[in-house]
Length: 296
Image (cartoon, rainbow, N blue to C red; front, side):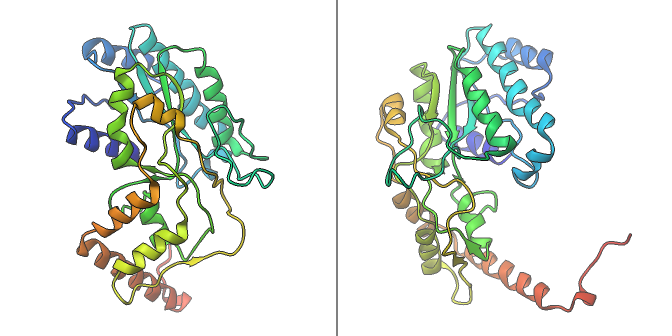
């Protein structure tokens, strides 16, 4: 998946030797066999899980499948590692909060309870998993929020925003993978456990991302419109003080890193983005009768 592939590439680039596995989360014997045949020297990182197809709305219609992947499967991995004295890093979500009008500027810590009135299956199960993992003394649980890659991959936040027609007027915390993934080994060496807000310092305004993109994109590229209404998804800012203490490093600022990433984008990436947008406009302009359709 997107996160797993990104973690692998970044950690290998840092010089770590990574052994990968495609064993499914429901395969307890398979998980135990992998750990016994290839015991890690440092620890285990499990990025597998259900994030919805194509988005987390899928989870609302498939609660049992989501629970099997995001709760039962994660507990199987945690238990198998605990029984072997292994540290394991699991991936959660930071999209647990909505900005609190009564506390403007509040940074949500790992101890704050989820404040979303109707969280949906995906978030509700992530919250339940955090509660259950508190009984383990070998699990580091990283809250990832709106992950950002160093390119225009449509699965990363920059690539998503660049392809939308309208974006929220939001300023959430984000996880810039090239900044933060290299910090994981330090936390594993320290045997850090518990929940950690695995995000960059400060919120990232979507409008700022689009401004940086407009400065680099070809002249014909049309920037998405920033909505005037409130965000449609959780978009709060998380506190990173515990994260900084856990890894012994200063956590990079989100907007500074994003501006660097956009400044470093290759010209062909931006040209392809522009060409993709032009083709989409042409498809939308075609009469309905001429558009491709599926046979019944």
